[in-house]
Amino acid sequence: MNLRTSGAVVTLLVALLVASMSIAAPATAATSAPAAAPAGAAANPVIWSWGSIYSADRAGLAKGKVVQDRPGFVVNGKLYDLPGRTGCSWLKLRWVKEDGGKGAKTYSNCSGSKPAGFSVGVGYVLMIEGMVCRGTSERITGACSSWEGVWSQGG
Image (tube, rainbow, N blue to C red):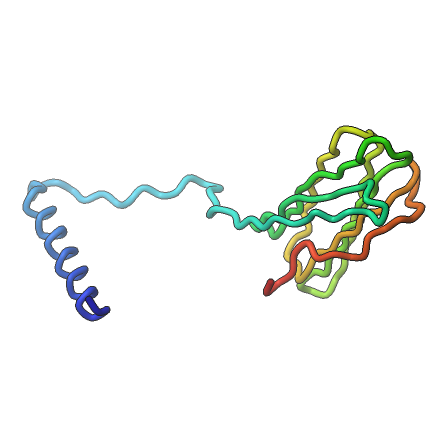
């Protein structure tokens, strides 16, 4: 069945449906408008997975998801500090906004066993990158991965 035939069939079915509804409904009944969507209801968000990004010594790991929803993008994930290693894991995120502005956020995890969850709203962006490093509880000392893509416009 080609597209022209499919369109004709759909048009015929809609016409039959409308005709059957007008026959079944009493002539005195008022037609009601369709119910409005609840206030604040948003379309389904779009989700991309990212990671795994390991520190250079493979003792730190980050992975997660980027969610596109109003207002913009949110980066969610977990930062792991793998057991049996001294020090802490650090995640550095950076992004470039549509208006040319830049942003950055840093997270750490010193647990040695439990992943640390994080979430950051970045707004509407062109790209997001992440880097996992090792350090002390106060600062990054080295063993960083290279900057890896978390999300970018157009893939």
